[in-house]
Length: 126
Image (cartoon, rainbow, N blue to C red; front, top):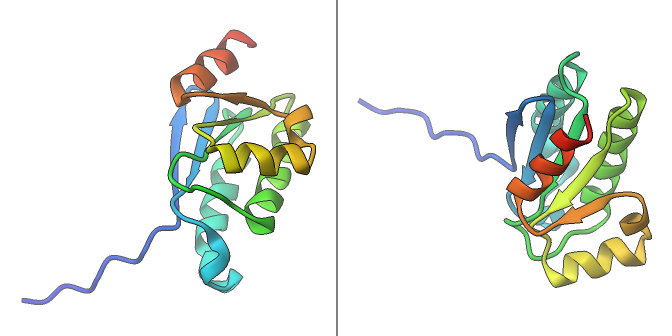
């Protein structure tokens, strides 16, 4: 009996209360955007839910990131903001913090050391 291989996942999506936690699983420099269409659709479908207000981007699985991840973060932030919510990051590497600082996104989004801290902050701001 053979089974087809499970498709590779590029993003892990979790929900906690009214927050969506999105975790890129590795840097996106090594493949085309076509590879990400299904992943991005799944994130968008979750963000469209009426109960989702906030987004937490858990960057703990990737040491660095580039424009694709930054663009995703901006799009998710805009959707959350339109619903009266916000975006935060957590588990960011030192290089990741430098990238966010260079792009000045550290002035828009809170950064937390852990997912639990981010979730606690988001739920406290309700």
